[in-house]
Amino acid sequence: MTPTLKKIASNETLPSQADVVVIGGGIIGACASYFLAKQGYSVALIEKGLVGAEQSSRNWGWCRQQNRDARELPTSGLSMRLWDEMTEDLGQDLGFRRCGLRYATDDPQQLAEWDSWREVAKQFNVNTRMLSAKEANEMIPANGRTWLGGVHSMDDGKGEPAIAAPMIAEGARRYGATIHQQCAARGMDITNGKVEAVITEKGTIRTQRVLCAAGAWASTFCSHHGIRFPQASVRQTAFRSKPIENIGEAIYTSGVALTRRLDGSYTVALSGTALLEFTPQGIRFAKEFMPMFMKRIKAVQVNLGSSFFKGPEAINRWKNTGPSPMEAMRILNPDPHGKNIKQTLHAVRSLFPALKDIEIAESWGSYVDCTPDAVPVMSAVDSLEGFYLAAGCSGHGFGLGPGLAKVAADLVVNNTPLIDATPFNLSRLNDGSKIEVGAI
Image (cartoon, rainbow, N blue to C red; front, side):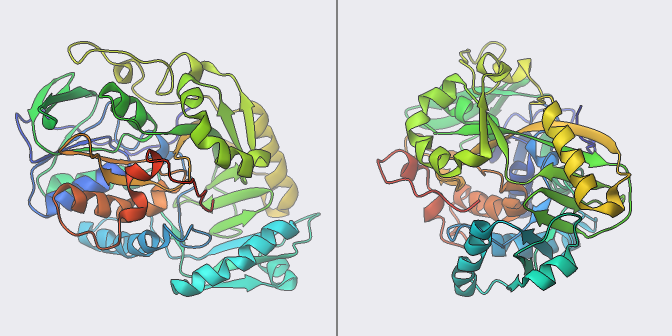
């Protein structure tokens, strides 16, 4: 099953040239197209399936600064501001609300980690406070669980994954960008180490600047051109309920996480769990990812699934003149994990008596693309002039999307980014530097 998604139209004619070609119509690609087009650059946004159809519509919708890795915090602050600014500029409701996020746990280690993060919060003036056991249990009352404490991040909030990327892409089109769905980028025309064009299944676009925001497909596309981008995806499952009583806008517990949607339903998922599938790409980058998996092994299950044989992490070989793996799988749409859904439904009904009658409207699986240190890559690719990478968001892409995309867009046109982009450079993953695994 696929999650609800706002559909938008494609431009009928593929341009013969563009100042910038953006590959990938998720939240990063849509926002980058918007920022570039608003500055007056001609932009072609290329999407193999539908804008927003993969991870950008399958996430929780959280837009947060709380518990971010210090390397991401400048971007998260920028993103919060840009969510507000885009909503005003577009004159459209993206579902963004500074509703505050509420966390509660009965795990002393987790509580200690949240408490220690306050020192990071102070450095970046994040408006957050620890909750006592009494406050946590009053703020998030649960049946059969007594919280040891929690966190309330007052200025954080949520967006609406079903509509955000498509509506922002429409905003880019309003400023002159063109949008091309069902149009896979097969590769690039490269001369003397410089990008000259993007070759799509529907024709060639001459350009000297390409931003690859292809999500879980980014490493495969890079590899096609001999570019090494360590990336692995973990599989997650979530469901959307039918509209039901409001028990809070955005809640995280050590059992489940819930996000209230505009229609009165909830996005619900188990907290802090994921499924890692053995794949050729995963094996290739196993050494780089070992520190992360050792740190988070309790939250990661491992198996061998169909992604070993097909999809972005399988063995993929193709020519620019023929069909690509992206055309064979227009939308990365794994089945939801049945056992996970049952556990989630049982947990939410058990924890929250007000939701004892909650019903599933739709459920879905997704692949969250990660880097070895769980910090995104927003970077020029040194080995190929004119090629830029914006991927590896590690489950943080929706909330950080506007800020990350603004950084990427500035890099593409040689503007000085509003924040220091050094922590997001691709080179850190390939130059032998020690991997410092970021916060979740």
